[in-house]
Each structure stands twice: as structure tokens, then as C-alpha cells.
Image 1 (cartoon, rainbow, N blue to C red):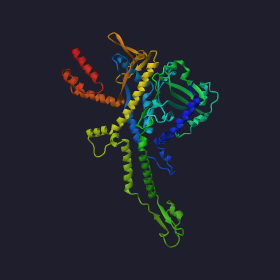
Image 2 (image 1 turned 180 degrees about the vertical axis):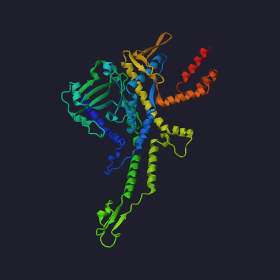
Image 3 (image 1 turned 135 degrees about the vertical axis):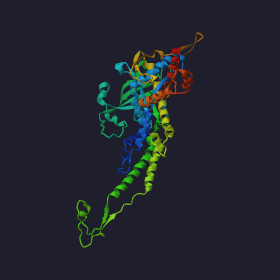
Length: 530
């Protein structure tokens, strides 16, 4: 039986040791909302420009234009059929979990805070108790691990916290007789624009911890508790004694890091890199605007014993201004001249804007603009490809995290798909007009398979698979690219039966989506002619 009080003390220790990172994440959210000038010690209001926000938005758009889709490969010839089925099943599961929305949220976190986090769970209550895989975006602000580790799975304990209504908790968990709501204040929260009342909330803790099975195997147990009350624990259920919560033996969380940092599974993001340049831009903007405002507002020196009627002089609606005496009072009143700022200020702020673009990799050419007189299409395309290297590198790291997510999903299928399930799968070209269905269970991938050599059993193994990722481009651009390729091949005479041999040599040397399908149709056409 786990010790709840010990777990609570450990959670407080983890939370205290990562307070600097927590504060950075909270402040970064303010920067993202253009509220960062309110964090300055200077109480004077400084307007915020959106150069930083624009850079983040462009990077997010690049990521959403390359949403990953998995392809499963078998490591053994006997598992080829299972791999093909999983290649159809995983996209269907991702679609059910609104993966584009989850992926978008992960990338927002990755750009703002440096770390996005997936949660890959088995929800036994889904589908009316039938159970299903659940993919969620996890807020790193509510995830706590042992400080100093580079991988979440290296932490002996892992905590995930969430605020829940006290009334709801007492309704679904009758063992809770009395619950203090002060525990809600222990959960770190963002600075919201609205007033958020947490007086009726309590912090629910999901505690994942490493243990040993009776046979000595390392497993992951799970305990849900709130305050001193235990709500659920896998150690109380005999079916989890040997396997733990999940047979794959890992925490159900996968981090997607922008720029890694030693000693933590989290990193820092593009926003952190651009902070200082954005702040200098805002301060220079404010100085220039203040100077323009001062120059546009006419002010005067007036002697205390002057002869000009000040009220009439300040009122531009009155055509006459009275003075005392015979003189016009030019010695009594004099305009204050405001010197314009040097052109150097404009030069500096432009340099700061360029610095922000360069440090973030958000050059004009990557956003579709040109400079320096570049007008040739080939030159622009070459510059765009060169300028997108940083984006490709960031997307590649997301694909690696996505492969880990798919691996966990396969393991959950291996463990929980004990009865056949039917799925509507997506056709290879992405069309949904003609539905196709797949019935699948874990019988072909669960347990051990025996390998025979000359009739004798050689060894046993568990079916294993490799995962590769391709980018699912936006439908419009993908369709246009395929149409242009087909038109070009047609004009080259590739589809002419007389050019079969040359067409095969040409297509074999090329690499594009749908190539193998075209080759097979050429071979089929030749067979039909024969």
C-alpha cells in the first residue's frame, strides 16, 4: 500500500525545486498574449508590438502544414500483415482523438515554453465501458518529476495534478467525507484575464511510481489521491500485480522539446530567444512615439508677470487673445521647441527587428517575402529551401516524439485489444468518399511467436515493429502538386504504351508519392495488351 503522506511531501519537494521553470512558463504566457510590458518593474505603460507573436505564428503555421502520419514496418516477414493493419489502424485512432488539434496545442506549448507534452492513456470508461486509447495535450505546468533527470522515464516518481470541483469529487468518490479546499492553492496557475475562482476546487494528484513485480520485473504503478484520501490504486488490484498499470512499463507521457537543456526533460522555446530583442524594440518604439507626441503637442514658456491672457491663448476656438499694455508680449511667452530624435534611433530599431528575425530563423524569405532585388522564381525557391532548414529541424524533433507516441499506442493495442473492434480507415490518398473498414484485435501481436528452424523450435519472440513518419501536407497544396506531376508525366509521354521501357527507367529513378502505383499500372497495361 503506497504512503500518501510521503507522496504529498515528495510532490511539494518536486514543486519547490522547479519554481524557476514554473515562473518562466507563467511569464512566457504573458509574453505570448502581448502582456509582457506589465511584467516590467517600471510602472510606465509601454505599448507592445507583435514581432515576436508574428514569428511564433509563422512557425506554428509551418508545423501545421506538416502534420505527421505514421507508417508501420514489420521487423519479421511473418508480421507484415499485422504491420499493414496497424498502418491503417493508427491513423484512424489519431483521427478519433482529434490529433490535428492536439498537435496544434503541443506546438503552441513548444514554441512558447520550449516543451509540449503528450499524454497517451487507456480510458476504460470510453465507448460505454468498452475502453479506448486516449491522446491528450498535457500542460507541463502540472507535471512534476525528480529534478536532474533528462528523461521522464528516469524519474522514480512522476506526478500530474489537476484542479477538480469538490462537489464533483465527493459525488463520485464516496470515501471522501471531508475535503479541505486549501489544497487548490498549491497548484500553479497562469495569469488569467478573467477572475478564476478556485475556492471550491481541490487538487487531484495522479501519482505514477516505479516498483518491482513478484518476479523482479520493473513496473509502473498508479495511484490517484486528493489530500489524505486515496481514490484508486493499482496495487489494490491483483490483475496489475505482475504488469503494473501498463505492460509497456513506461510513463504515459511523451515530451516534445524545442531546444534541450541538461538536467531536465524540458527545454526552452523560440519565445525565450526573442524576449530581449522584442523588449528593446518595444522600448525604442515607445521612445520614438513619445518624441513624436511631444513634437506634435505645442507647449510654451510663460512669465508669471506676463501680459498675455493664458486662458484665451490656450483656447484655439477663440479668434482673439487679449494682452495688457501696449506691447504684444513676445518677451512674456515663448514656444518650447522639441528636437527630433536622430535617424540613428530608427536605424537601431530596424537592426533590432532584423536581429529578432535572424535569431528566430524567421527571415523575410521564409515568410514569402524577398529583399535585395531577388525576383527570379528559381532563386526565390532556392532561398526559401535554404531558409527553412531550421523549421525542418524543429519539425524533425516533433516527428521523433510522435514516433514514441505511436509506439505507446501500439503497446496499448497489444495489451487491451482483447476483442475484435471495427474501424473506418482512411484510404491512401486521403479520400473519405468511399468508406473502408478494418476489424482488428491483438491476437496477432500479443504474446510470443515461436520461430522454427528445420522443424525445431529455435526461439520465441514478441512481434516488434518500426515506425516511420511522413508529412501530411495540407490538402490543397498536396492536390495541386500531384496534379502538376501527373500533367508533366503525361506531356513527357510516360503514359504512352510505346514508351513503356523508357517510362519504367524514368519512374524508377524518381521518388515521389504514388510512383509505385503508376509503375504497377504500366505493368498491368502491358500484361493486358499481351
